Amino acid sequence: MSGKPEPGGRAARLARLLPGRPAQAARTPFVLLVVVLLGGGLIGLLVLNSALSEGAFKKDDLQRDTKSLTDEEQALQRDIDSYSAPDALQRRARELGMVPGGDPAFLHPDGTVKGVPSPARGAGAPDAARPPEVITLTEAVEQASPALSPDPAPPAAPGPAGGQPGAGPSPAPTTPTPTPGR
Image 1 (cartoon, rainbow, N blue to C red):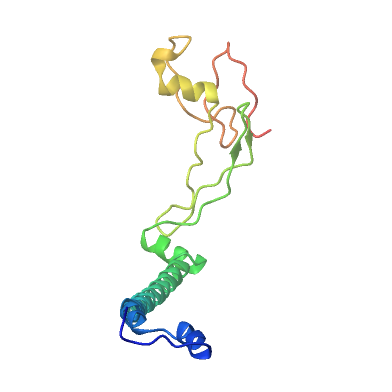
Image 2 (cartoon, rainbow, N blue to C red):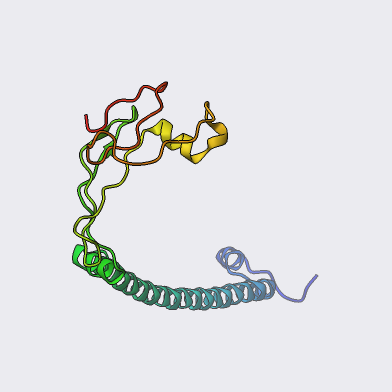
């Protein structure tokens, strides 16, 4: 047996509650585990903080880029608005030699013309400009493609019909056409 006497009574109970020498050896791995966990946590926080800072810098750069692109878009929109203003369009059209148009005439699907067209009058246009010839849809098709025309007769020479201004060539006798201007 061992040379050490065993404590009795109350001392024996206290000896069982207090750790002895072998428990000291088991404490070392626990302390190492806690130190490693704390070190890993600190390193993880450092990496996370660096990533957040990098994200904040990227966000600032993107916000700055967005602001500059928004400013550029607004400047371009102002340019578009200034170029598309009616007075700017009129000035540019005059520079290109365009003149305001005359009174319009409308062609209905049945070939009738509503309104009396008038030519555009400008600096280079003569005052007594001849109005354009008014022809029916059938005549336009015949003039555009004689090969597709139902009758091979050549189209009539253009000129005023019946002395009416704006009247086109008289239609062929077999083709009924409505009277222009009604």
